[in-house]
Amino acid sequence: MSDFAKLYEEKKMTPQEMAKYVQSGDKIASTTAMGEPPKILDAICDRAMAEDLKDIKLYKLWMVPMGGRYTLPECEGHVDPVSLFAGGSEVRKMIGEGKADYIPSYLCQHPDIFRSIKPRIAVAMASPMDDSGYFSFSTAPLEGRTITEVADIVLLEVSPHMPRVFGDNMIHISQVTAFCESDTKPVEVPLTEPGENDIKIAEKIVERIPDGACIQFGIGKVPDAVGSLMKDKKDLGIHTELLCSSMLELIKAGAVNNSKKNINKGKSVFTFCGGTRELYDYIDNNPAVEGYQSTYINDPYVIAQNDNVMSINAALEIDIFGQVCSESIGPKKISGTGGQLDFVRGANMSKGGKSFIALHSTAKGGAISKIKATLTPGAHVTVPMSEVDMIVTEYGLAELKYKTASERAKAIISIAHPSVREELTFQAKQFGLMI
Ligand code: COA
Picture 1: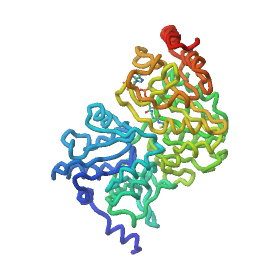
Picture 2: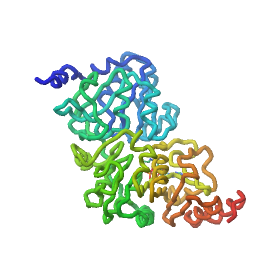
Picture 3: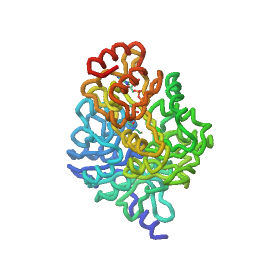
Picture 4: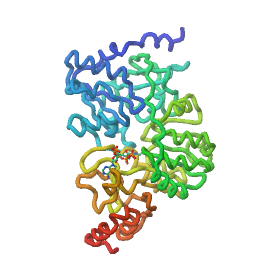
């Protein structure tokens, strides 16, 4: 038996045995999104509730609904979530009710935030150990290596359904305190079906994306629609926070070869992956795909090393000054800053780069204009006006970069829903804008 195989047998436990490492007052950091280890987290919550352990804080990004026991009312005060993104419907609801907290942050900061939190325990999902004794953090390279470096105790949940992903994304069995085997499958995120307005918006973006561009897509229907219209492009590269199924469609169509990149040439690189099982199978053991921590992928100065970076993200509302809100409706938290500003900045600094913020002109069946004279009071600004490059709605594309405040307001009003343009123009004049 090899040393690694021996270590494997010594460190294998049940989730319930691993939960015994946890004490009252512990700070636990977890890998995120499709990389959440549900069996370990549920066992920790069960033990905390059964043995009345108190004030355990669970720090994690939260992107998608996972439905862990930490969301149960009876777990409150035992294990309390703290989100670094405020996504995922259950945790978002808890934040709205004052039952969970969040850390406002850019995604590029997350590993550093975990360093400052200094969790005593790190928990992570992982793909099975290879012959050299390494597990990969699979779909969640974002923070895996940092949280397992800074914590005293490292607990892994290892599943054969988790893809093995190369890059800065590995941990050796000698660095692991204990692990359990499980049959957990990564949550699947289906490709969205674009509506008529998503396609109209996507068309305006796609005509500005050259062959050879290096792409980043954010969350939502518009980024998916953009992907669906780019299959005839050539020599695209991928350097993205989220690796999603619309990107796989481009890879399958032969539009992506990463040949024009200046860094990570020949590789699609990402910091977390969320999509269909087909996407997870594609990234498994694939040398053309690498995962890195967000301190690398989302660093605007790293992003800008590639030419023609095209960043495409969605927003909830913008004002006529060009301030973008993508994470709240007034003070009500809907989402997080995530990597939106990281990629807007990186694209702005990239030679030939462009950043697109896309939104429908209205929400709630046309009842609410998403373009407003001023943001809803209490709104959290995601992209400040001086960073914004292009805003796109189904009515057109407003180029804001290096334009005056009055030129910006005029361009933004021209892409608002026609029914609100007169009122917005009136407001703009009240604010002293010369339009
Ligand atoms: N006022 C009131 N409600 C609004 C609204 C507004 N201005 N804008 C949107 N909504 C509602 C929608 O009607 C929808 O409600 P429903 O779920 O009841 O249908 C909901 O809010 C979500 O809006 P939608 O525009 O469909 O969201 P999306 O799925 O396209 O996601 C963001 C948009 C902005 C929330 C998402 O892109 C995000 O989280 N961004 C921040 C992080 C980021 O961009 N990271 C970048 C890299 S991954």
